[in-house]
Length: 52
Image (cartoon, rainbow, N blue to C red; front, side, top):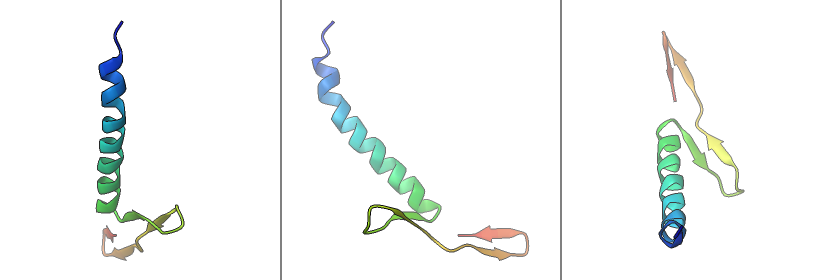
């Protein structure tokens, strides 16, 4: 079985996957901080909604 194409594609797919996850997390208020962790935006409860 020739896996050369998989070996070429896998690193690109991994970078793309991480980028997509980062953007989705940012949409809900989670972003990377400078220390390698994550910063979560404060939440506010209004009536029956939870705002991020």
